[in-house]
Image (cartoon, rainbow, N blue to C red; front, side):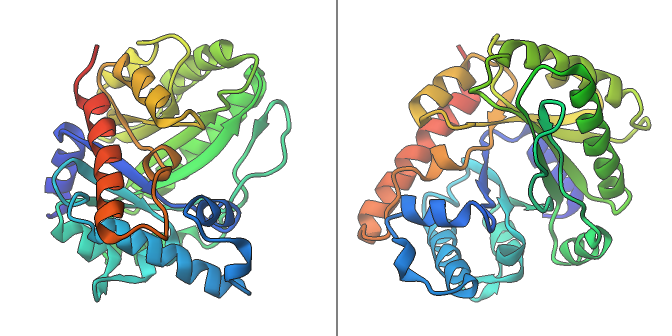
Length: 297
């Protein structure tokens, strides 16, 4: 796939985007969920080797390349690694899966109800390297915990500033201002977020587009104006901590939005499973998430 074909696949493809981008802070939890205890590694290098083995097992599973997964978000180390002897982005592209990379370096402490992204001083170099490997786009996450209009405005300003930097490298940014689903202000957060994103989109030059990765809204259909916006290539949803069945139920009630799940995709996978058991568990998750992404109620 060339960039134009990747754009079309993400814009109109039937399927969802797999989030395989657990990073330093979330890797131990992901490995524990996979059935690997903390004492299985002695340093970060060994830990990242284990998570890469898990990701390689996912990507090389027959069901992953079956057409229902149209994109995958990678951690930087995964992008720089190999799958079945090939650079990971190339292996994905050969499966018909569009590669993205997580570029944020984690979250700052909470201030004004939000957690901003930490500085990314080497971002330009990372973007150059990623594009050289065939990566189509990026993903950058920050978090909204409370309905603080000023905090949300500053968070979105940072997100869109990074997005413009990504666009400047000829890549597609996925803007992820996650609303904490446990927030008492969840519905108010959603409304403030919608208004803020619409205002920021007005500043994106004509002819350019971004993607949005959002928490499933408390009010189904709330993000319809973003789904239909000419400057938005696609809106995808994170599971946000919901179990897969609940995340899929809520996703199915939001037309035009597809999944970009991580925990909800991987929750039934275990290191100890045979290949047949692993493929069956992954295939079931893929089928359920695909259904919720494509068959709306």
